[in-house]
Image (cartoon, rainbow, N blue to C red):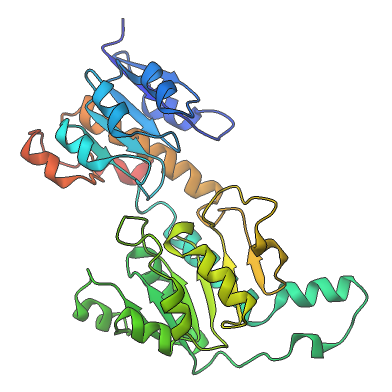
Length: 339
């Protein structure tokens, strides 16, 4: 009989082959589930030693029901599905995978930037409708010499900043947690959020979803933007106040938007964003490549291995305060780099 029970609370993949490969061990029983509600998570995970989570709610109610869980890992970067404070109080390590799709998301943000500013989708639509006339794209402005504002300056926006430099874009950054010298070393300039909204011709949002960032780009920020500004979001939909964005588009306060994420996913059929010709929408796909999917899933499983098999904190521990309650090793071997 296996010593540890590991439950995958939910997933949207064809199989669990990468997780099974990492967790193939005589002491581990991998239990797949497809939970959608708190009650379903409680029923599936009550006696779990570890949980791998995608979208299922890991709320305080769920966490208080867990009898022996030691670690919860989440597919991807964001951990907004998990009540971190409640997990820490229970002495449960929470881990994510922050580095699996750095290039993919930066590339996707760049693709949305180019598609918006060059009006690629609009031109494509008109040509396929029988209209061959460059004037339907007017106005288009030269990118070189213009300014991109990055909201957040973690690994992904830092990668994006390197990718836009050959285009001749000036880079400004708002991130209250990044030292100014780090921003300067990357050839960018640190500014306030108000200054970024006032100065940027393109704004690319890369902030995680927390209580402090929810709706941080709202009516005040849109009022500060230039009428020619494009806004790109590849982070989380609720970081932008969607009502304020729709209002800004309706009133032509901004030039358009490129969105990989929206407030409610999948997007509802009556969402006004679907009606704007100057809004490009993709289905939360920025993270995806075949390589990034394998890396994310393998590393999420490896976080479980760290705790259960090796007695270590997971490599990508999110709730660092749990170290005051749970005492594990901090040793991290090289196995992560050969997945």
